[in-house]
Every structure is written in C-alpha cells, then in structure tokens.
Length: 118
Image 1 (cartoon, helix red, strand yellow):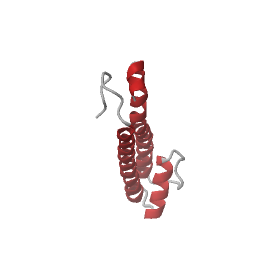
Image 2: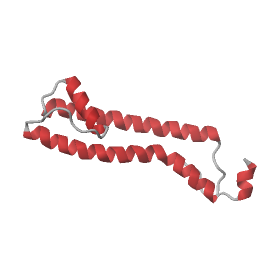
Image 3: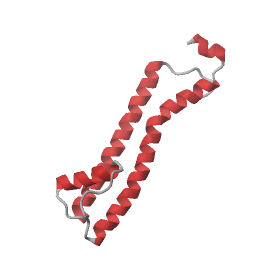
Image 4: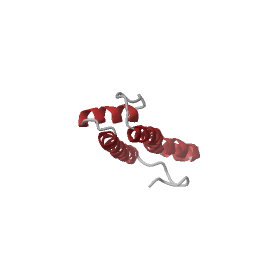
C-alpha cells in the first residue's frame, strides 16, 4: 500500500488518494459503530429511534449519555458501548493519520538529492 523507504516519495495525487481512502474507511467504521449504538440503545434501553441515535451519537462523540438508564441490561450495554467508542476513536484517528505520518516519516528517509528531484 505504501512505498518502501528506498523508493521515491509518492506523487501528490497518490497521497491525496490515500487520505481519501483513509477517510472513507474511517467514515465506514464510524457509521458501523453508530449503527451498533442505535440498535443497542433501542433494544436494551427501550428508547425510540431518535433518542437511540442521540444517545449513541453523544457516547461515540465522547460527550456522554443523555437519557437516564434504568434497566440493568441497558446499563451494561452503555458501559461496553462507551469502552468500544473510546477504542473506536483511537482506531479512527490512527487510520486517518496513517498516510500523513507515513509521508512525513518517508520524507525523513530520503536523501537530499531525492528530495530535490521532486
């Protein structure tokens, strides 16, 4: 997927394509995680679809729940979903930053002559 350290730096259009691909994967992961949260809040907390979306969005965004949960199953779901959301945040940030960090690190490995040829 990425060039090796002995290869030249990828052209700008390839770099932009990598960033767009990373953003697409990150968006797909976020929508999947949001869907899990909406379904979980709807089933376990017996909330309506809009309230489930609100609670899942707030947890996934790091803000915290909106509605008071009374059922034990809903509380257990909310705690696991909060942990899952924290890990999802770390994963999404890693996926989005991966092409940028790789490009910076690859530029450090280039010799001055390779860099001037661009």
